[in-house]
Length: 122
Image 1 (tube, rainbow, N blue to C red):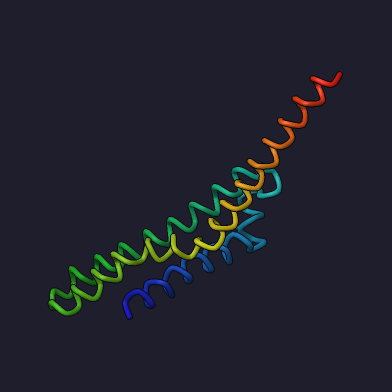
Image 2 (image 1 turned 90 degrees about the vertical axis):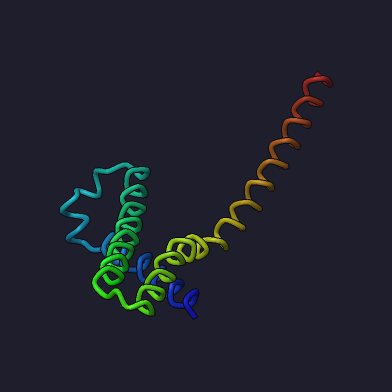
């Protein structure tokens, strides 16, 4: 159950970050059109990390303000599972990227092998 709750919170972190990152007023305020793609990506990643950090601080506050053992355990579990659940949400993307890199690596080796043979023939 905690894993499911942490997974849902991780989704909230990602979607709320994307919502802010997509807002016209936010983009206007940071002069988004003038920022290189790498920097745009970094801004999005920092928004996600900031939301995760806010969740973590909130869990810590709830645990400290409510020293009842049950609440401490629940908030501790959510706190511990939030970041792994967030990272797990990217598993399909990482699997796809690994396949793509493997395919790219094979293609590069094949091209290099053909290039070497072509040079020998000439």
